[in-house]
Amino acid sequence: MSETSKPLGRLQRVDVRETWQTEAGDFTPWLADEANISLLGETIGLELEVEAQEKSVGPFRADILCKDTASQTWVLIENQLEKTDHTHLGQLITYAAGLEVATIVWVATHIRNEHRAALDWLNEHTAEQFSFFGLEVELWRIGESAIAPKFNVVCQPNDWARSVSSAAKGTSDAGLSETQQLQLEYWSDLRDLMISADGAVRPTKAHPQGFIDFSLGKSGIWISAVVRMRDKGISVLLTIGTSESLAYFKLLEANRDEFDAKFGEALEWMERPGNKQKHVRISLHDADPQDRNDWPRQHAWIHDKVEKFHATFSAAAKALDSSEYIPDNDGTAA
Image (cartoon, rainbow, N blue to C red; front, side, top):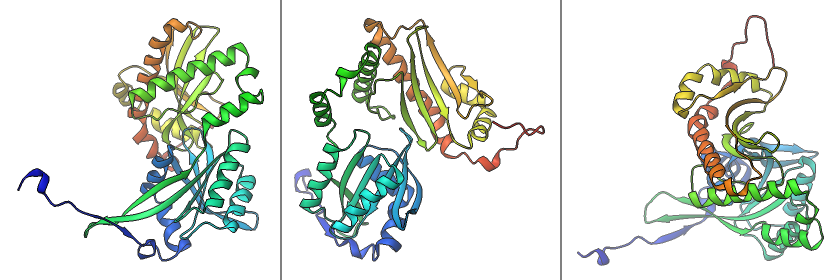
């Protein structure tokens, strides 16, 4: 039999009710599972970590509350095992206001046209730090294979449209200082490099500030790149910024020789007593962020170190358990 005549399987659509009989009892717990929330996150370009299910917002209960582990902002997920309705649209807006979330994701078997238009309107008219997604969930199988889920993005933020709208209103780049404009261009060029390189770390949106953050896959711990305009240097850091910062830092530092060896260079371990944020840092000195001709070298260095930090610490960070930390006898605290 030739290669072209081999029989091929045929995709078959599966009724979602065959897998999930109820929304609250079946679909929401399934979606909150680490592997499945990761699939949803990949669909919309975020790395998500579930913080709570059935989160109370006044008299209401939101389905799933997550953290975007890159920006450390809230992500609210509201799901339906049916077509979207006006009630859930109202709930989304209520929850967004009550939780001050940055990203709102509405998952359903079908997004009605009027609700798609409503999400598009919200993306166009709300502040830039808010994002609204509409996703349709499907189930498929080939022959007798296992059933496979698929998320289809029906509506999402249009960053280009927002930037054009902001510029027209005089609220975008025109209002930036010279330093802020330089920072925005610096990080934008780094982002372009990371997209073209297609590494393990997803690039995040560029902002006019002296740093940019990247996800490590665990809420409260992330990778940062920092530029220093005055003393002409750049750094990449593992940043730990949670209520468990000291415990997490100490647990990692106990194996610092192993981490340094895996990274390939000696890292600077910064406990910073009295500060919530703890750092593990690598720096490049005599690198002037204002020298555009040197940007390719600087961006290549940052990208290399960001990827190394992810490869070195991602698995260990996800496995951290603060209960394993035993404080010093003097009871020293952060």
